[in-house]
Amino acid sequence: MKKLPLFFLLSIFLNLPVQAQSVLGRWENRNEEGKVNSIVKVYEKDDKIFGKVDHIVNAEDRDRICTLCEGELKDQPIQGLEVMKGLEKEGDEYVGGTIVDPKTGKKYRCKIWLDENNPDILKVRGYISFFYKTKTWRRVK
Image 1 (tube, rainbow, N blue to C red):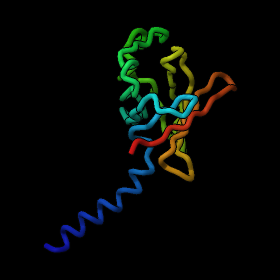
Image 2 (image 1 turned 180 degrees about the vertical axis):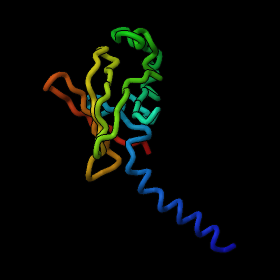
Image 3 (image 1 turned 60 degrees about the vertical axis):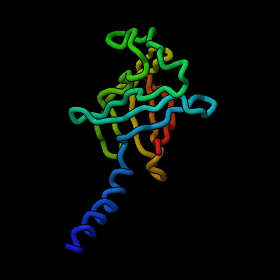
């Protein structure tokens, strides 16, 4: 019986590195000044990766809607909005999905990956044609 608690403790510690290496979780999205403006929850659904705005930091902005978005996102509340859709694992990256900028309503092709030196940093890249912009999100602790 004494070995049973030790087994559970070891299984918890052995699982931590696996969880820390995942893109799943809550990530800080920062503005150009480096200030956190929202928390995005990255999750798995139907074997694909999605992300939604889980929390908007500035209380005055929490009731905003996506007036510039198109389709099903048009006029939806930004807090709770599914902004990243349909990414699939390819090697160490997740590709083939889209991401929407709620401020502009523009949709971009998207890929994400963990920083090779720090699994608490997520790189998020949006593409239009050959042009792209990469943002760095930090894992919420």
